Length: 153
Image 1 (tube, rainbow, N blue to C red):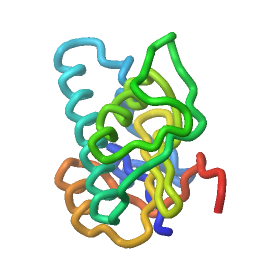
Image 2 (tube, helix red, strand yellow):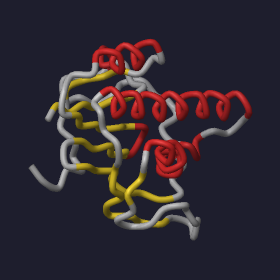
Image 3 (spheres, rainbow, N blue to C red):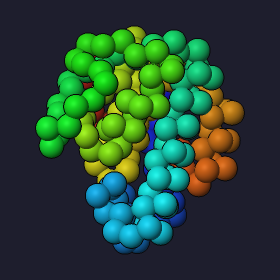
């Protein structure tokens, strides 16, 4: 399986330890005005669209919800162990990006994990050059990187 870290953070601005050196908003709750909120919503859409593009290009047809944790008493439209089809991914990914809940989305040969501070980790069974190009066109950076949320393999 190929594993990636996909972020809005340009790798050229990381220090030797990998820390990002430029101060930017890092989560949905940081949006403190209409400009910031509009930027956040666009970045959110970019993450959601790029994740779906990777999964579709890799031929993934479903993802299971693993390790679901609710936040702020917010209800979400899926449950632990639910199997989500492609038409359900957008809402589920947005729920995690908006910090309504946290979980891992996994299949036998793929996964999508969202971490703190706008970090997305994705595993796919094969190269996805169209999705990588889409990420670049959406100002997201794709780096080979193992997910810290990976529980198997």
